[in-house]
Length: 328
Image (tube, rainbow, N blue to C red; front, side, top):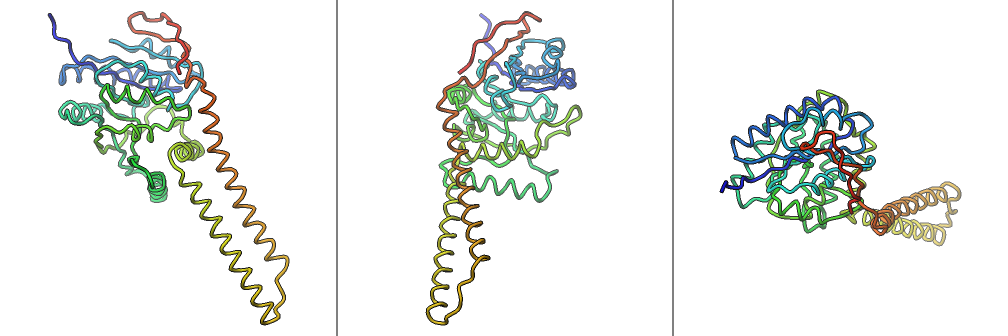
């Protein structure tokens, strides 16, 4: 009886990546051959089409080889959800998550896999961007973000660690049990725990297509992380309100002292407007922030499916569509 070989699933979400389909499929073929030769593992490729508006899924279905499937979501749910859809489909002993934009290289992928294979005491090996190309301002903002979100936590979200990682099957099953509707994968990976190890890397330059992340997307994503994993923004606003109240009390005492002992007239319109604008701004900021947290709570309480699968294209029957059921 033939010995059952360990298996590796490669999960790769994509959105409008028709131009990179051939190049990424070639990278996957080389990676599969290397994994089979070096580690004796079988490879299954799971690509998730996150509601692309181009013909990326069709192009991938024509250039992929070996064992593969393409999960096509009913619309664009976002990369965080697309990763979950791929993990839901995986059954491998290990799972590698990588992007389809060719910025995650074969060399680093093999190093991640080797680290996990050679160290049975490690459950997750993740790539940590060394940010060599980032500007000083962006680096400082990133450092501030992680300092704030990790404060007062029982776990730390590693700085500059994304989805590029390899995990054991037990970790994947734990992650798929977390059905948050508003997903922040950096936080979920850290919250799940297990024994994790970082591996620094520099992402490849994007040779084809353009990034889907704008500055507004990054700001919204950061806010998603705060509202999902930190109460610090509320505490900062509360502290600001307390300081404003103390400043108002001190100013009131000063005015009272000057009137009672020196007969100085109370300043009128300018001081009044400063107080109104300051307190009004603090109140509106607090209300908006509370609204963000309430919206997250409302989204979770509706209990809608995290995503809906339109269909699945599988490599064992090219071109044949298998209808998918809504995932929760």
